[in-house]
Image (cartoon, helix red, strand yellow):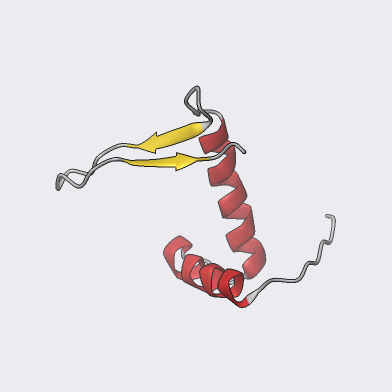
Length: 70
C-alpha cells in the first residue's frame, strides 16, 4: 500500500470530519477512499458539458447539477 501525505486547510478538515459521519467511517483515509469511489462513479456518468445531474428527490426538491470538468 502506498503512503501519501498532504496539507489540508481548515475548510477541508471540516469537510472530511462531516463526511466521516455521513459515510459512517472512522478515519480520514476511509473518507478519502469512499470519496474517490464516488468520484469514479460520477466521472463515468458525466453529461456533454462535464457535469453530472443528481435527480430530484422523492420529496420534490429540485435536481442538482455538479460541474466536474474544468
